[in-house]
Image 1 (tube, rainbow, N blue to C red):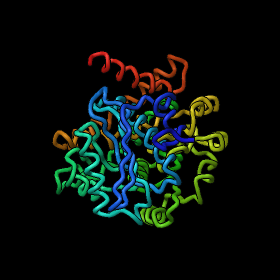
Image 2 (image 1 turned 135 degrees about the vertical axis):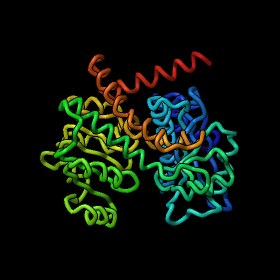
Image 3 (image 1 turned 180 degrees about the horizontal axis):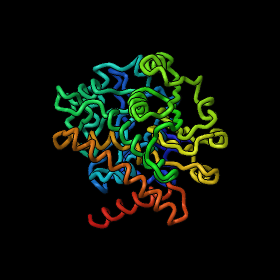
Image 4 (image 1 turned 90 degrees about the vertical axis):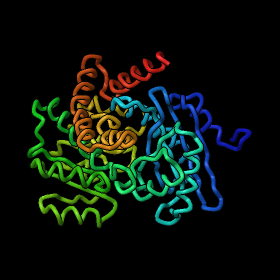
Length: 364
């Protein structure tokens, strides 16, 4: 079933009526010459211009791409609010396999679409896009972050994303075990690409026992060759069942916590870099019912967005690192609010973020 524009009716219902809706603007972008098909979703500008990355991914359907853009944009509103940034939430997805269709012409066309929004949306890197890509996009759009230092940018934001997740793990350890140290803790990381391999470095340096898995064998091999004490696991299904696992860190794509994985998780804590880890509403309660402490994804993975936001005002790495270090305090505050209100941490984080956005709308 479609509406008069040909768009799937369920997508429009999500946009205008469901709990996942409330978006201010959704832009469908197409450039036939370059093959660009993209979706830009702006969830909220209550706190300021929407800020969020560009995901380049071979979605099975256009409907799946739209749904992902909507979910990711909404998540960015909450992430930016909890990070204390003066930015709303937005996200863009480019449909297609970046290994096959990514070209300079396509990225320039995408940049023109972002520029046409006049600063309502500020873009950056995400899955499938890199610093070099943002340098190209920036040639057509000044509202581009995540650029290389040579082009006035801050460079790779995954460094501070990993640092923030590490702080979230320390806060989880403090809350659950009364000590922020991760030494000798068994920690499993699913996805050791952009962010995950930096996270490994933090954990190895502190003396944690690290297990890793990734769909790319070469990525895993690079880590295990560098760190002989890091153990490779066959796949995520095996990782979540590792006996004695203290912390599970999903650092790949979303939906890692679902009806199949939560019942078999051996870890006492979930704290990772992936966006939208909860596959559907209610999973956060399932985790709580099993006594598993969940550090909300959009809180602990905010280091990257802290970095790219700072780029708009003249990047200073140490200033950003200091802000990202506060993720430790923010995570502890969420756990305290969850305990006080008798709700899961994910719900507590949502309440705090929604309060900040509501206050901003009230002032406007």
